[in-house]
Amino acid sequence: MKLIIDTDPGTDDAVAILIALAHFTNDEILGITTVAGNVKVDVGTRNALRILEHAGRNEIPVFEGEAEPLERELETAEWVHGTDGLNFVPFPEPSKEAEGSGAVEFLRDTLENSDERITLAVLGPMTNIGKLIRDFPNTKNKIEKIVFMGGGAGMGNHTPVAEFNILVDPEAADIVLSSGVPLVMMGLDVTHQAISTKERIERIVATGSETGKLLSGLLGSLLDIEIVKQKFPDGTPVHDAFVTAYLVDNTLTTGEVVNVEVETESKLTIGQTVVDVNNISGRHPNVHWMNKVDDEKLFSIITKTSELLK
Ligand code: BDR
Ligand code: CA
Picture 1 (cartoon, helix red, strand yellow):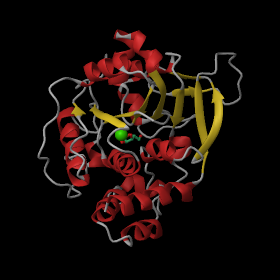
Picture 2 (spheres, rainbow, N blue to C red):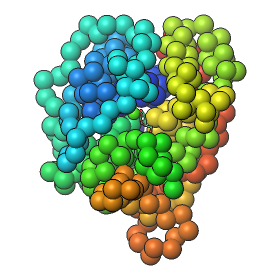
Picture 3 (cartoon, rainbow, N blue to C red):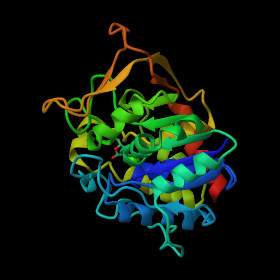
Picture 4 (cartoon, rainbow, N blue to C red):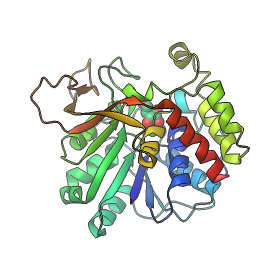
């Protein structure tokens, strides 16, 4: 597999990236592209570099992406991920900088010049990918599939019906959802089913590795947020981890191929993913929408990550 990770790191993005680093080689991970979302894009870029520094994987290039959504003002989520984006979990300072070219340019050149199709793991707002597909539609043919964290059927986490990644850039999500590229959706439907309980975090720490300590910091860091605590008293979801864990083991989740569209206009429901779970719209099924998860499997993959990376 050839993989590019598009991300707004972010505590759960960090978990997702560590999973990928543990299970895939530098030949498989062609690059990391960053996008504005949880934090401003320069902070996210630095975090991507810090994660690679920790894992000793600086050969993987990082490309800074879009600083603003396609048509809207950026909304960030420092209240969830901290002003540094990693909730002050002590990743090292980076010794390397991002590459000179931007994310969309890298995605375009890499896809255009690749003999094989490339999988995109999308962990943040879809601005980079939406812009790529809008401006360079031919690159679609080189995308094997897009596995993304975003949306939910009838539920949200930043509004009653909108999930953060989709809410930040609904126009970009609309381009991706209507692109015809094979799409796998890891929405709140599955991410809310796998919780980082104390026992699971202890299992990760028991591996004794530095990565285990960092993972436990990341997984535990949301526990003190009041609104999260009310909904998830026993631990928190690890949204983005689903994307890379699924690439490690595609039996992690199961679902159905259905139509998913995004609301881009209504004040009340902007950013809602309308998931046609009962297949009643007659619209074309465009998304492999995941709705069941083997939650133990997710945490085994995270524990394994901590063993493999040391
Ligand atoms: C998504 O929003 C971000 O805060 C997380 O990193 C994740 O990608 C969850 O709604
Ligand atoms: Ca994210």
